[in-house]
Image (cartoon, rainbow, N blue to C red; front, side):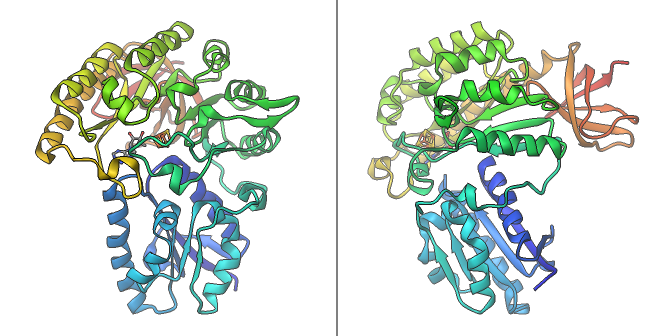
Amino acid sequence: MANRKLFIKTYGCQMNVYDSERMAEAMGAEGYTLTDRADDADMILLNTCHIREKAAEKVYSELGRMRVLKDERPDLKIGVTGCVAQAEGAEILRRQKAVDLVVGPQSYHRLPEMVRAVENGETALDTDFPEEDKFEHLPKTRAKSAPTAFLTVQEGCDKFCAFCVVPYTRGAEMSRPVERILREARDLVERGAREITLLGQNVNGYHGQGAGGEWGLGRLIRALADIDGLARIRYTTSHPNDMDDDLIAAHAEVDKLMPYLHLPVQSGSDRILKAMNRKHTAEAYLRLIERMRAARPDLLLSSDFIVGFPGESEADFAATLALVEEVGFGMAYSFKYSPRPGTPAYEKPQVDDAEADERLQRLQALLATQQRAAQEAMVGRELDVLFEKPGRLAGQLTGKSGYLHAVHAQAPDLAPGALARVRITGSERNSLSGELIA
Ligand code: 5AD
Ligand code: SF4
């Protein structure tokens, strides 16, 4: 059973990236090593995303392509994991006969057992929300060594935004205990991680058991900052209503916490925010941003927006543009509303599609202008850059500034993992160029 090859294709958010690593580690114990080529693999896992309709449809078309591989090599096993697996379950096995295995995000620790069944010619399906904590049943040490690492500290969501499938696919909010997180973080640092990004669908809603009771994210970040060798901490993704005083204070007090915050607002219209069940107003968001900037004046802000939510009028959309103008985002993601079966907004009358497309273009044009301005404002500054990998040119390394901008520089004497001072000399389309400061 030794020496089989596993190919994992990951869709969607960073939590899926983390999960894919954990699945590879669990499969490692079964004799599988990772390959980056599907046509070379004995087992293919598609780790899927269900957040928008397009994401789910992509999975079915990819499965169609995989089926061709399987026609040529009937021994090939194909599995679907992630949120499409959770949402569609047995339907996937019915719709695409080439699929052998379907497993939802809460059951990844059961993967080895399921794989054994699949190797014996059975199909395997598990979309339970099991009692046990999967993290406790996944391999204790991490296989990967890289300068940056993800670490899931929280999963699931109880917020039930009217457009979102996450509360259904990932289940209720769950926070991992403090000690387990610290242990995993120390392990990652020993393996070469210098930056850890804490992940959760509602990461700032973290409330894990620690010494003396429940800890919030601010306290967890302070404890992580005590780990020698760990240089940078980030977290994503957050809900405005969970930014508590201690977490805001951490942005002022913890040097290792990077000056970048992804804080989705979705809309600038109170009417739409209410219809979305976001439970805050545009004004409350703006006041929160003021507090964040008071704590960390150079904070670079990022957000998510949805345009064309059911009932969105031109005036509602104008309120979104006004909010963007007022905040000034360094980075943002914007999406056209995608109706998701099973969510409260699904049945609501839709905004005209051409209208929604046109609004998305206007919003993206404004956000692009702000993004460019934020990048250009870096030119001439001296920034710490954590180098992650070789750049495109010989002698070059590329990495990230504290503000999460990609930066490349000539650094023939440094290796990935180096944290170096760089003078920013230019702003290109999606990255900055710079020179090492001797
Ligand atoms: N349609 C469009 N965008 C969505 N998002 C979540 N659900 C939907 C949907 N049904 C966006 C939100 C969220 C991000 C991860 O994806 O902006 O913050
Ligand atoms: Fe989805 Fe809202 Fe939960 Fe974010 S907070 S995962 S958008 S339901």
